[in-house]
Length: 154
Image 1 (cartoon, rainbow, N blue to C red):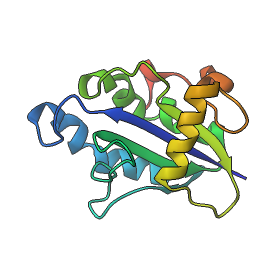
Image 2 (cartoon, rainbow, N blue to C red):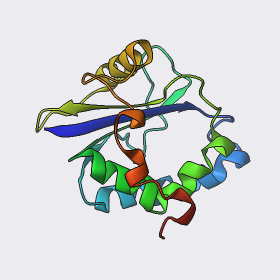
Image 3 (tube, one colour):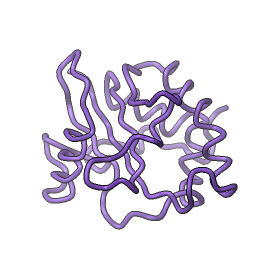
Image 4 (cartoon, rainbow, N blue to C red):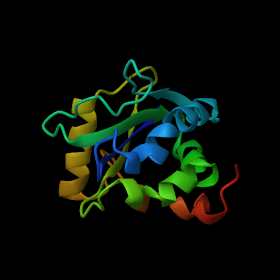
């Protein structure tokens, strides 16, 4: 079994707006870091190398990040203990705050690559039922085991 994760957000500005430049200018770097990270398996991407142009079913204004990892610990380490954490902490500069869960994880069979329909169904399940075996958030795992955002390494 592997771990799939989806996180979504609404950009505060168009992706070509100068206020989004720091985020957009670092996507290749942060995505390359993910791909080199222990436990990384796969990430959704378009021809431009990121996923900002991929339309989310039912909500074209939503930006989605979908990936597969070997386990929660590997994903948690990447999110909270690498330079990615510095961008994670600044997310409110580029994305509107979400009042509903915007990160969901679930287990997938080895070799299975989820699509956005599956991922959005899992997110809907989490929003409707809370964390379950079918779909869960950081609240269902010990995120504090990896959370070190303010001191993340380069």
